[in-house]
Length: 260
Image (cartoon, rainbow, N blue to C red; front, side):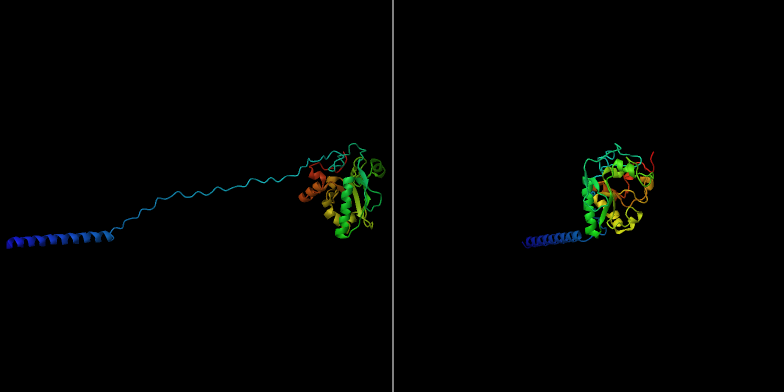
């Protein structure tokens, strides 16, 4: 009986030892799993993603700047305010006379006649010279008929146009001076307050200093700081902004230094 009990006790001791050993082994395995190993384990790089593509540049549609239409009016028709008259381009017909001539209500030496549109513009310009600069302008000569040009022409082609070739015959031109008469129809007019104001401002009212000092080889005429030709505000502004000073150069016409 005592051997039976002893055997049972011994069996219990052995079973306990086995259980303790198993537990210790489990603890060692758990500790080993938590400790770093001698050889570091490389962490795999994340899969590289495709670089973001830049957004394409958004190009604004081109802005079309309207160009000046040089063909908008005729340069050949004597009724056109863009008519170009010079020693190579006579009036057609030679004895042309405008149908809309009116008396220009400004100070004058001789009664001035001009075409209605040109007259209205010159009245506005004379008034601006007075209001803006305190100047008083006057007409020395405006429309001249073919017959009058026959009487005036004295043979000097640099000073006076031949009949049928004169801008005065178009009804679009005025020789302007000061009411004082100082330097009227003389090159010294360019240095007067009136001459300077007209040179700098006539374009605003549709007028062009037709025979500049440096363009005799183009226009065929000596410098006339008093001779202003109406071409309309649209054209005068375009010429002013682009730096053209003669109709010949602006319209790409041949220079006209002499008659053919």
